[in-house]
Image (cartoon, rainbow, N blue to C red; front, side):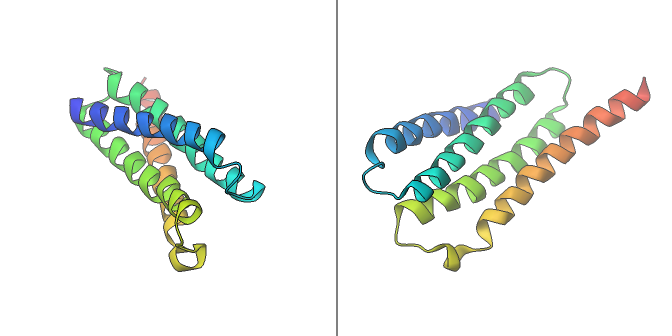
Length: 126
């Protein structure tokens, strides 16, 4: 559990740093569309950090469930948000990593679907 919380805390820290960096340093560097894309990456990262905190602090999930959901969300953040950061902050083009962002989105969706299935099973049991 503390491994997941440590990684989650680091991802939260990175989201705040990149959000501040975007708000204060990138307005003169990126186009409005690029800045919007960058902000989307930060926002999705922070949303999932908050969910990860709740999941890993909640006693109603087994360690296996916490690790599974966390793994999907960690991968989703790295691939989805990370690829957008890479595209906006480096010479890497979207065309060269076109598959990475949607793959990250798929990992996020699988994490949410896994969470849904866990809750559905608990609901049906009652």
